[in-house]
Image (cartoon, rainbow, N blue to C red; front, side, top):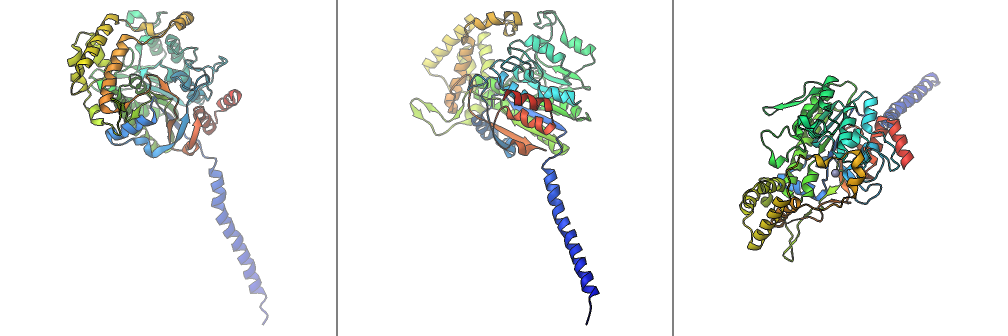
Length: 489
Ligand SMILES: [Zn+2]
């Protein structure tokens, strides 16, 4: 039988179907290729845990049971600065904000002193909302590096002025002293009232009353203390909002912004407690950072278009879990000792300097079981020296003006008797808790990196600290940042 037509027709149908099927099979593959160039995140939240190293994270996880960022761990960061294996916060924050390494103490300037473009300035130019939230003065090194450019981190009056003129949509933290003249309780030698100036320009004031933080609308500024905000462990009713609360309320406002936002939120005083080797105060600061991370991750999960990055700028204190004591190495640590501590070493030292009995005050607030006779003698001596040298000051001398920079830099730096008293109290607690410390400064160890949300996969690995800004610039197509990074590579 001759049946040419049908088979012939069937053959061509089969061919057609095969081509269609192949196309359908290959289509998702080609879409997959397209997905490798993803839509950029609408919002970026950069969390910075100042001074938080890997050992302290281990301690914190054990101390209160979990660490919210654990499941978003993506890598580690090498922190060294342009001129040192051990960075300070100014150089590290400059690297995070601009993608360029600079010298320690320098804010937002390249080693050749050229002002550097920051990711926050690029976001502003893109009509994204910008926000800085900290628990130090908002003029402190980390927040400063995202919007200001000064040759030394102590030039905080200049930083405040640059922040006031930066167009930053939200500033929350401490440090009215840098914004107000002496007549209004501040330190500004030029007698400017930058807060009134911002009000005239349409800034709202964030307020904290009856445990409630209110940010009426953006742009807004809220400074809740004259200098640093209180340590979490020392918080009282008038201490102002906590980091998690500031972040929660900020996100309500920022989320309204159609063009997206970039928020830098810093667990600022983890570093301060670690400088004092004050384990109990540090763990409470980490707990507040962890609570803040939960607020941020909740937001990002609901939003779906927010990239969250959490990173430290360096480790502070060189903490160890387990230590030597009385010529013996201990394979243990005792978090229960730290749970009994009810105040920071800073607050305890303040009470002693104000006249409280050294021994009973230390025992009352640290929860230590007792002090040896020799320890009591040491403490009384240190307390005496601290009272002798302590001068009630306005705190203004901690801020410098550009004209006096060279003179100030010549002065030799030494540990004050007040600091020695604080260090001693911290060390007694650490000995009992079997927590070790190697420095009252920073270390050069690698620190942890966490990421969640669209683009998070770009943060898997071990990177130089400049990589964060580089990856953000590539994701967001911040061309000027990418060009600047190539120039200084
Ligand atoms: Zn730092």
